[in-house]
Length: 206
Length: 434
Image 1 (tube, helix red, strand yellow):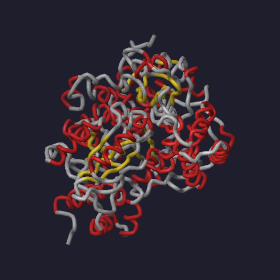
Image 2 (cartoon, each protein chain N blue to C red):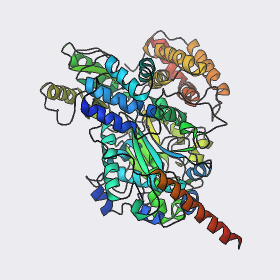
Image 3 (spheres, each protein chain N blue to C red):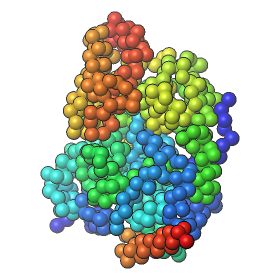
Image 4 (cartoon, helix red, strand yellow):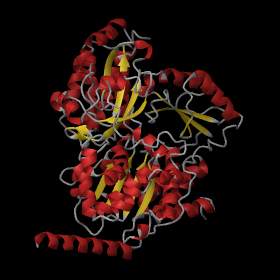
């Protein structure tokens, strides 16, 4: 019995087919498991292990290396405030401290109502609109305490559901099909290229 | 005066709200470079890029054409695009993948043709949710258009591109760590030399790893010729480059300007570019190429922005990020935050980096927050000297990858340039800027 929903399980199998080796699909599959559960549950990890031909310990060990994977439940909205160099110079630390008060949770923890998890992030590569804030990895571009609080209000009221999916959903655009370059064609194109090379080399010699 | 009359090679569609769509791309010459490339021999395509002398735009600045020529001949080889942009204050690839994903794809398809590779992977930073969606949509549309997949535009060339999301790890911007992550493992950099990815890369097969901006330059180079690209810029630094300007400037943003023809002062002060410093304050220091780069003082503002020009002065253009600190900025705080970043992002394989980064961060923390001593400055320099012996530029490496040897850059710069400010922190028992 699959832990992943039918649709996610199907997407997982499609992803694995894109890679020369199943294990390569590890990170995309972990994103899918997180899309279903909001974090990496034991069941989700076990299924990724089965799909990639590894063990749950191996999957957990890999996942724990990466900041975006959560091994414990997190809020519906994971709010990241950057305090790295460009944001630091623009008041990122102060905005992070404001966020703890506004969301009612310390950095690295989740609010009592389960709505928000607050994270201090490293550079998110949006340094011209600093300090940078992401919610579930969507740039929200609220650089002041006032605009930050307005955003929090919108999230509480469900007014951002259209552009900020619940935590875990990363890529909402599904790949339209599998691999198309058949093995025969690849061998063929190499032969054509080699023939062209040989022909030209012969031309240069004569 | 800034020289701003060069063509926009990679940001040409900046003015269009729908710059990321297939319709806009096709309406502005999209995939013409690919159509032209497919009429050429693969070697001739590679030669144009070699003639362009296109330096890699990821950070190390290695010539892309030479990287391609080093690919070991093998029945199977791969092209991998490095879109794991995470060097602090660098945001050019973020811009490109969100705003012009087709330009990236066209560059990848042309490069794959030149290399005769039939599968390419685009490794994109996981935090770029919108960028991932835009690139996936672009891949779908490109398959539909016949510019990707089986027998591209009716030629004998076939290619698949797979989008691979990262999951939050700075180290995966290092190309061998990226390959490990693409193989589904922890992002531990591999030991090299002797075996660079061009010889032993993904699954042990020959692999070319190129940055997003590098790939985005390729369609223009094929359409206009390598010589036209090489005619821009100066010396080894040809073409234009995207500079990500951030920090205490009035107009932070992405500016594509001709290499070498402009100075740091032009970028920071020209009204069409950075527009000067917030509140017209004085510059204290700039970081010329990402936080791994040693800093420059205001005395070097007139230095031309070229790879060799910056290297001669003991730093690097690196990832194309320029951070400006002014007289209101606390350099101790800035240095502490940079060392905290390296401490967190060290993968932990090598002792000098794993232990050194944490030790440096703790000393910087107490200097900034109270409890620091003047002896800490000698301690910091000694620690840095153990991570990168001699504190030279380019640094000596004691670690598998260059993350370790990047740690001393900011610490060494800050202590050399602003010893008084450290002394003020010690005397004040914390940060005098608070």
